[in-house]
Length: 216
Length: 110
Image (cartoon, rainbow over all chains, first blue to last red; front, side, top):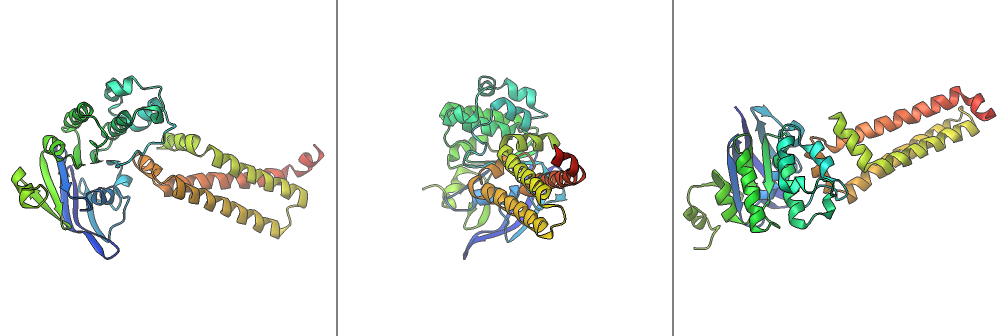
């Protein structure tokens, strides 16, 4: 079974319980949109899956194999909210480093092709963000976690990023979270809302109003 | 995996490698001057090497936290990166001491 499966996630910051018995799964071919208010624990959940945060309890399986830290399995790639690639590295070196299976396709992408000899730090904020997202998407990992990938991106660039996600949907599973909820609704095959530490399946936009995510 | 580690060491740890190698060379020189039978010198060398490793790790954790995602997206954790780095450095240190000991007479004459 090709699936990222996480169950019974429990995490607290001090006395405040952020996540309580959270369940989430993502199969290859799915784009799971994760929505929630500020501080609801969306980013924390992604960091827990990736292995950056150690929760109080976790039950994580990748393709049926129990895993403690997602990144150690090499099947999970994660785009954090901020820049994560050192500014002094060149795009062409990073292509070699991150992309093996999909290297040729990545080299065909305009923003990569045009900036191959540039250092990441010399790119504009939007281009840098897009390129970092592309490295994560075009990496060899089967499951991709994207934390606010559309922030800092102009509408056209955000549209381009969506096309890349959709192009890879057949090969990978995505978990995407962002406050630009319309982008998430556009790109996702399934929506999960995190509210009060628990997760709710969302079927229609009205469910988002019902669960207090959108104003009525 | 090995290719990725080499890339990380050559792009982010050049200064660390240079400083740790300098420390090893300095102690090899001290052993040549003072002799290889001084237990206190061995303790001092080990203490300095341990301190250098702790400082290296501390600086990475304090000032380059965002780099952890960059490493982890390559499937590498701090444990793997630093254990290999420190092991290689320590082997180099021991090798330098051994070479200095074996070639002591030749080096001192030269």
